[in-house]
Length: 304
Image (cartoon, rainbow, N blue to C red; front, side, top):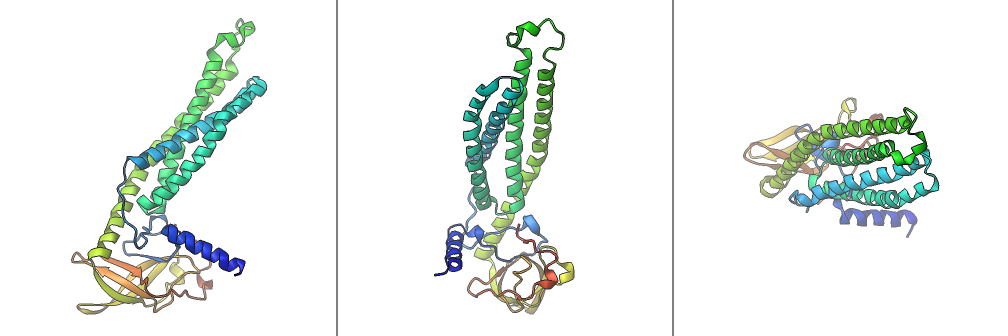
């Protein structure tokens, strides 16, 4: 077995274990594109978004805050003349940084399983990180304020006006930074919540159509227009319904080198409300168009 084959088999194994790793073309019928494409692997279910996920995001914020505070206090201690004793703050910052990476990965993985969209998941991560950085900067501001107010730190300088000017300035800078980052987090959080709700509604719609919709076979009738390529493009889908043959335009979100060839089998799910879902037929092998040069001006993925 060659190294390439071994690597491919490992990748397939990981994709089977966590199906969101499969980066296949996704069709959208309501104009969703880029990070707003909902990816619902076959066999996936929409689990309740309970307090455990909220606690995971909170843990990311707290661990990030402790990491920022611990590492920042090492620098602050040396800058204020405390010397090598400042290294002890790494006992806080180091483990906290490791925990922050662990919780970041947890929110990333669990978020995709619960949200199934890249953009709202990224906003959730950003909210947690903003909250953590704000906590860390606030802790540094409090430390500098303590250094500026404790008269025992430099009793020989008490007679001099402005002896603690540098400490006060540092406390002000870090407090201002904490407020600015907290404000940014407060602005991002509502968009994250709204994005999560929309993503879960769309995931529930997809699962409902798969389960209860009328299943019809169709094909991709043509390639997308290279002039309108934007991490994907519109393609015509041809299928038969009760009234005869129909052709509808949908958007295919994919990489420039992973565009399905005309004739690719798809499954069209419809219901009585006129809602519609188009997906690749999982029972047929997928063939990609070999000439992606017309689309190479944008080689980004449409599902991210």
